[in-house]
Amino acid sequence: MADEIQTEDAQSAPAPDMSADAGTGVVAGNERILNQEEIDSLLGFDVNDDQLQDKSGVRAIINSALVSYERLPMLEIVFDRLVRLMTTSLRNFTSDNVEVSLDNITSIRFGDYLNSIPLPAILAVFRAEELDNYGLFTVDSNLIYSIVDVLLGGRRGTSAMRIEGRPYTTIERTLVQRMTEVILQDMCQAFEPLAPVSFSLDRLETNPRFAAIARPANAAILVKLRIDMEDRGGRTELLLPYATLEPIRKLLLQQFMGEKFGRDSIWEGHLATELWSTRVEIDAILDEQIMSLNRIMNLEVGQTIMLNASPESKIELRCGGVPLLTGRMGRMGSSVAVRVDEAIQRTDASRAL
Image (cartoon, rainbow, N blue to C red):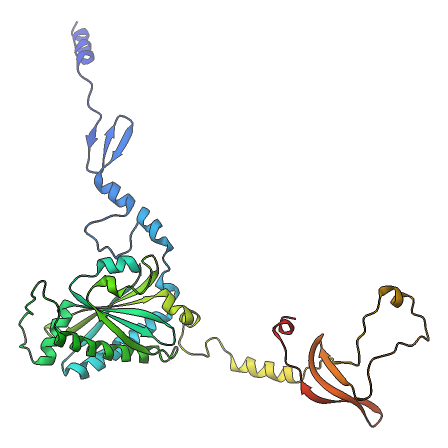
């Protein structure tokens, strides 16, 4: 009897709720519902991370069209050289103890970078003369006020007073322009071992919309630098579109700096020696005629073909069917000889043979 009552109570009891929230998701019956953290991780969104950092999930697939700067290994060498040059030149410029450090090198779309620039800031647009394109140099407000304090004798240990909404004065813009010109000279020296490039300042802008040097979807290389002057300093960023670096892309693909990459002088000398001693066959063409196939098939022994050439006509010398030289036929001793007069200028069609 007790067993029967216990069975009836078990059957009349409500079914347990299968929905449970364990922090990782909600289970409803046989279906599992993702929570907000899992959705953000799947899509690659994280409000706590920097927007310029590498993403995962769907956002990583969307941004996979960007070309990674790691495919241009020479850039790290060039920018490392730039950091060392900037440390010396800015010390001479400010007469202070300056330390320049390279934070990171990333690839970013140009439009995303313009939207991420913290304002107020000064944007210097510079031109690469030999590359026939432009680049962007951004100086944040902390570095601007620090340069003004250092060059005009500000007190140490005091934070810069920033007035919101105030435009930069002529003195501040002039001092930043002088610092930018010093850095651009260092960039010329940094690229000199790789390729001679002249960087010149084009203009200064405070509105990112007026500093557009490429389309928003174009890929660019972003270099973040940190400049510290004891208790003062700030950040500066260098942006180079991939279109600017395209003329020297082959040089940037090298693993080591120098024009002798991958060369073997011993093998080159051996190859040159063998080439000079190689025997080649040269054909001397007296004349050429166009004849029908029927006439050629009916030629018999003893027939004569008249050539449209005289003893003064020029002879064309060919090697492998490629015309190289012209000369005149003569005799030297008991041998028939050809005296070379001039070389034939080869066209693009003949070079393709």
